[in-house]
Amino acid sequence: MRINGVNRLACKTLVRDVGTRITVEPLLGLRVIKDLIVDMKPFFENYKRVMPWFIDNDPPPEKERLQSPQARLGFDDTTKCILCACCTTSCPSFWGSDEYLGPAAFVAAHRFIFDDRDQAAGERLKDCQRGDGG
Image (cartoon, rainbow, N blue to C red; front, side, top):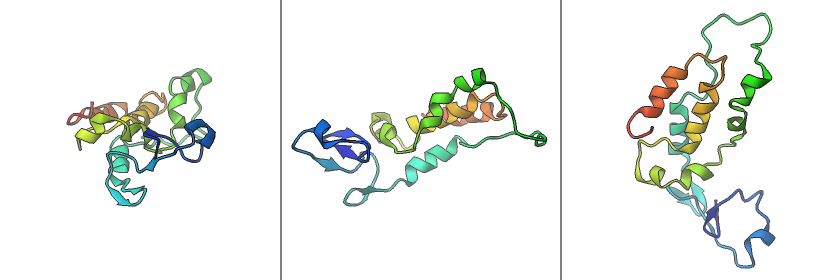
């Protein structure tokens, strides 16, 4: 939600950090359903367009699909997204276009494009470039 005009996680925001006068608003760029509740459907539809799941057409290995710590470092930060929509709903490009996927979708795509075990990087890149999404 927006707290004093800034997208923030209400569960992590301390009152002492935002002052004595506090304004709480719904996220921008999404339809308000009621009070502070917004329709997250467009956000999650854009997220799903980049196929945010592991794709490997090879037969499953005996155990797990191993990955080196160095390979993991290439996308480790992008695994920390909690899908709060703060980045996407603070992006003017997202407000102005139904085709723009938004930062959260691009972060999800990055996570799998740079995973050396995944086999759908090319398809994800095409999805990111459709319309004005890339």
